[in-house]
Length: 295
Image (tube, rainbow, N blue to C red):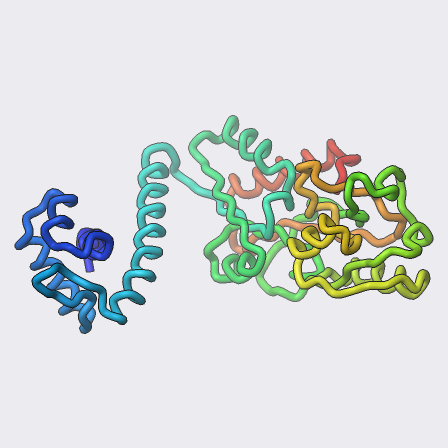
């Protein structure tokens, strides 16, 4: 199926009229009919029911068009990105991370690399659940990860970036937000949210706080749900500093504990490109120069 046929199908699905769809696409009605028929013959089922009143989507057609619309948008973006890349760049570094805030200095590092190597682009991907898998498939060149989550993965090289401290997240008007450092004893009478795929270092801190204070707790299955509950005054939580998006919505107060969460950049062991190593070096230097940055 060609991209033109995809566009013809999507336009007809929108208008449900062959003549109007053909006019909108600046083609003749016979051409429109021929292309729709050809596409249906290729895929082996009817997308549209024809009648004297126009066209209607079949049940299979409804499902197909829903998926086709998503596919066409992704294909359009891929073509546009390819066109942009072919005009300006000769190399692309793809970096995957779970959330935009994970590498606070990423925009600054991209700008720095561009000043040194304007022919190299950097394409970030933000995906909570799939970034490790995409990296292992070879679709991404660099992966941001917590050290413990990748230590058993073969054929990768890890580059230490920073040690993320642990913070208490509260509403900004919470009395705990006025403290410079929060201790376990300060949490008496509070409700602590736990869970949500917490790294082992954070789990140890959570368990120690619960055993030392006996405070109430409940499980929150992901970070966004946890923040929603904090905003709703249902509880407070402990979290790695790299999750802080710095939008000033919540108070992130350092929590007294010895645990930190080592964060690394991973590369494929056989990838020794100068541009990749240079980009990682830029990021490492930025964090080295900003040791007091709240991560």
